[in-house]
Length: 175
Image 1 (tube, rainbow, N blue to C red):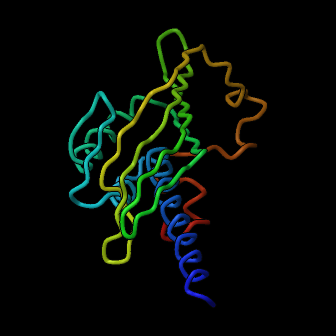
Image 2 (cartoon, rainbow, N blue to C red):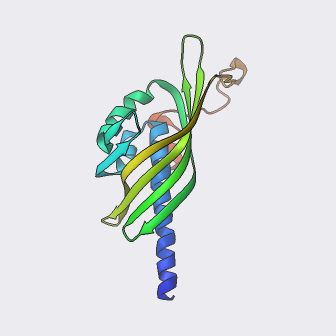
Image 3 (spheres, rainbow, N blue to C red):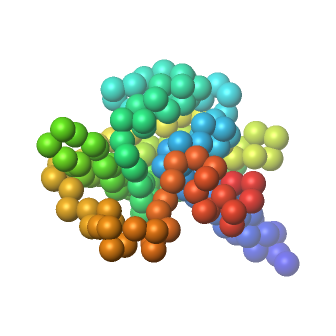
C-alpha cells in the first residue's frame, strides 16, 4: 500500500469515527443517557445551544432535566460534512429533532431543524467534540395525531423508551 493510500484510508477511518460521535450524541439525547452524552465530549469542551451556553458538562446537567418535559424525542442526523486537519476537525451536520410535548389540551409535536457546527479533536487516539454550536433553521408546532396509543394496538408494537430499558441497549453493546 502506498503512503497516499494509507493516508486516504486513515482519513476515511477518521471521518467514520467522527460521524459515530455525532450519531452517538443524538442517541444519548433521545435515550436520556447522560453517561453516553458526556462520553461524546472532551472534559474541557463547550456547548452553545443559544438558550444554553457553557461547558459541555454543564450542558449535560442542564439538558437531562429539560428532556423530562418531553414524552419522546428523536433526532435524525444528515449531511455530515467534515474538514480534517490532522488530529483536529470541523464538521457541519444537519438535524431534525422531533419532540412530543404533553399538554392540557393534548399532545403537541414540535419539530426543530438546524445544524450542529462542531470542532472535534483526537486526543489519546479518541475523537470527541471540543466545541458545539447549534444553529436553528426552522421549526413547526402541531397538535399530535399519534395513533400508537390506540387500544387495538396496545402491547402489539414495541415502543421506544428513555434510558437503558430501550430495546436498542440489548443490541448495541458499549454504545
